[in-house]
Image 1 (cartoon, rainbow, N blue to C red):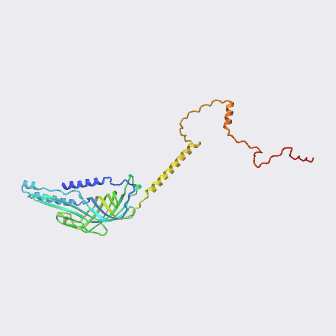
Image 2 (cartoon, rainbow, N blue to C red):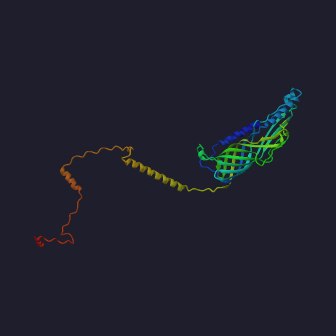
Image 3 (tube, rainbow, N blue to C red):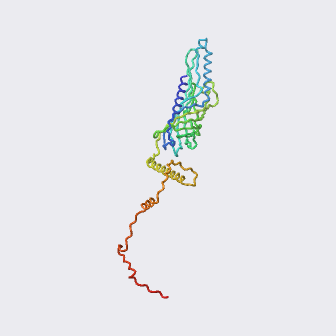
Length: 361
């Protein structure tokens, strides 16, 4: 009961941290590391359907204890626990991540899966007996992850959504060992299964990036032995099981080789933006003035403030009007006479002019 409550509490804490708004408000966020080292803890619900074999074995032992009871007191001493119906564990992965192109990642890593399930039985003599089975997996994986294009997202202020595909291999020491025996898995070179997940960049600080993803994996392995070798009255065909399942993961990556950061001149960019805004504002004002002055446009003129009507002028007398016109005419200097003009010869009088010769008829 305590172990179940502890697992549920850990799951609630995980969802609490994942639901926090760790991502920055910047829309354009990218991972700027060429090569990074990552550590990836997670929570996994294993697709282990063979747990019923171990529960059947516990039920069989419990009934044997009851049959061995001699009286009612002995039968009251017999008690048992049941195995969990869900195989819940905390896998841990680590590896290297490469970014050959922007928002396209290749990763290689290995992990460790460990799930121990144990129960306690009490016999008729009030003695405790512990029975357990442990699923252990050491998977090696190759992953390709790419960012989902922003134009396909319907959310605002999106950070870096990504989709990942994985291929798994089972390494040695992938096995099941129980209170009755041990079962080692085969490790074929062509692989043991696949996986996929959808991730989101939760937080980034300098060269550290924190991703959260949810996905599914299927890591199917088999053994040359049978379940009858590790559990009483188990099936006698060759054993096979799956160490994958639904998983929630947090990947913390540290950039070992990063892209150079180009610092932009914000002052020059701001001045260009201000200049562009001023040009657009001037062109808008000119267009509005042209529309108002164009009599062919149908745009209504702006309402002008009402002005007082001019007062009617009183009729003026003819003498006053003549005097006003004379005063209004600019005064011109009098033209000097011919005698006063310099370098001008005097015109001879009529008596001094030579007589004109008569015309021939």
